[in-house]
Image (tube, rainbow, N blue to C red):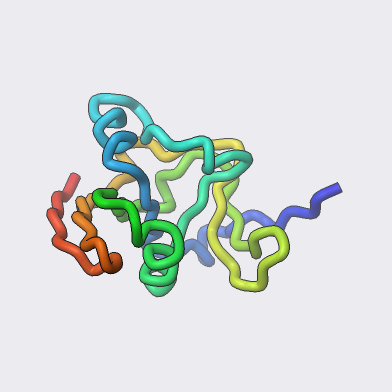
Length: 128
């Protein structure tokens, strides 16, 4: 049996969380009620804090030519938000179980055009 971390209480809620997704999923999300995610976001949706973004980008997105970083209002997420380690890991991340990201929870989006040598690429930002 897997033990889940406790739910995040309102007073512990960060002001913003970040979600990285493919440009294809972001385009598919437009005009929808919720953000379209990949199969990697099962059984929970992965989020990062601002401090964790560079590490996540370098580890998982460095070789992706174009992707999107969403700044999300966690108070508008639907589901059970938890702050916990990934299985086998020590670093804690925010995970959303049994829920989704409503499009209205997206505060802003940045389209990142990566350089082939890494993740420091050009950015195109928009607010929602």
